Image (cartoon, rainbow, N blue to C red; front, side):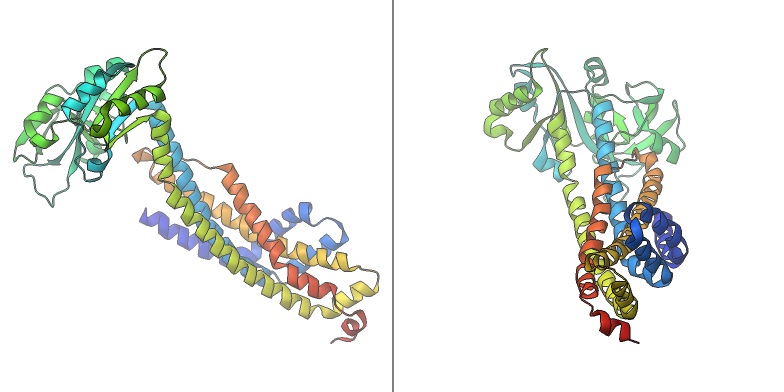
Amino acid sequence: LSLIGGGFGVAIIGIALLSRIFIVPVTRALATVLGRGTTGEIATRNVLRNRARSASTSSALMIGLALASLVLVFSASLGKTVDKQIDEVLGADITIYNSSRLKAGAGVVEQNTVDRIAKTKGVASFATQRLGSTVFGTKFQADADLLPLAAFDATSLARDGMVELAMTKGTSDPGDGVLVNEKFAQEHKLTVGDTAVFAFPTATTRTLVVRGIFEKNDLVGAPVVTSIPTFDAVEPTQLRAAGFVYVNVDDGAKPRTVAKRIKHELGTDGAFLEVKDSEALRKVFTDQLKPILGLVLGMLSLSLVIALFGIGNTLALNVFERTREIGLMRAVGGTRPQVRRMIRVESVLVALFGAVVGVAVGLGAGWALISALSSDGFVFGVNPVSVIAVLLAGFAAGLIASVLPARRAARTDVLAAIAAE
């Protein structure tokens, strides 16, 4: 990841320095749509007349939108990854967990609560998953690399299709051994049949046989999985309860209705419990992306403000330098609307050049980032609407930045302009 971050920075600097070269083909391409007609052609030539100035003017917008696009790709990919996990891994109609304790790393749903859930009308079947911690090695220390540990009844989960472990080797039933995910197996050079030593918070050490290897699963949330009897033998008493409860509803029943019924049945005892159907659970994850989107909006707003000043100042300088040229254009029949359109097209071409290049760099960097995280289960995703919105924001910035320079150019006194040196 550090290499990708460094590469992104180098790419931004390199593209900013080289932008004076490829501003020509990009601007020509944009001009086929925006630069039609005589005024459009003049505007295009004006942009390319001083390529270095035009490229440097667009650099602030380019960098800002590159960063915004990178964050948008990460956000979209994170959302797509969550959707994939829920669609492919979570088969349960309802998921229940203790939100307050879960944040402290010890979320449990008491057994008497589980029993009441099981008796609720509309519940066809249920299964539980426990959460604990372990250390790979012979000694459990608070400052050691703690590993999340999960335990569940593999038979009930598989039978009712509530959580699916995608096994690459071995069996999905840990028995008296363990299951480990692919990443953990690769890091510690483990395969099915090998033995591994784990230490637990109860000062217990166990040598366990690796029964199976599964693909990384964020919903299970642990690289190591044991059976419930093994878990209860090595974890503290307070953790010997459900971390998650998975529920399937009766045929014809609506998960959302049953979820409300469970919440009502538990009353105050369920005050800290989250009872979510698959759509509500999906919303929990997507809501966590809102701060990221807020960051994007902040970066985008800052980039646009800087771009407005940069492009506006450059256009004002261009208008001042071309006072005589504008006067001659008016003298041979050019109208004020044509002059205003020429300045607007110049501004939009410069802004869109920065926006297009910035978005392209951001998308490329986002793809590289997600590719590097693919081993952790990340899936590349792009929201086309967001990309189009970023480009439209660049277009709008160009239009707004051109207002004052275009007005000044259109109001130029023809005779005074022709006489100007």
